[in-house]
Image (cartoon, rainbow over the protein chains, first blue to last red):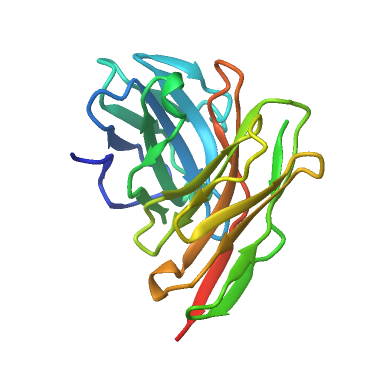
Length: 115
Length: 116
């Protein structure tokens, strides 16, 4: 079946602009995760949804970052007043409920460049 | 907070040979999961192998196996019969077994080069 998809693949925006990054999880996966991967680093956790609610948003760096998952499927990561330091690859992952092995399936990511 | 350390930024191996990638982690938890992910240039993270901390037996998946030393908090990945398609970034990751603490904590990665 289809894997996790993310759009756009690449996004270039100017400093101060607003951006939205979209994630389509694997059908039926109740858990959804956002990670940020800076150049030369491993992914860093941002936020985790179980269904429609954010179960853990402790990784969001500040209040410019916000994510929603209104119907428990597609999620959107929103970044306000973008800064050059926000440039990174934003990865989305999804998984089934906890008793199925905990595997997170990742999408190809969105490369965000803030100029 | 848990931390994951990969001390080898780059490794190279001759095709068909064996290579071992190192990973250490720090945690105060007794139950957790450890993973090795592969990230090719396409950026998509692919699960290579998983180890449950409560299992003493080391996990194996075809040419991939781990050496899990719980007391030493070490989790190395061995790739046997290396193939050109194994070239990628490899990330070690930790996940708590506690309900609600679902996030993965990653190391900084090891870039593996396969020499033909």
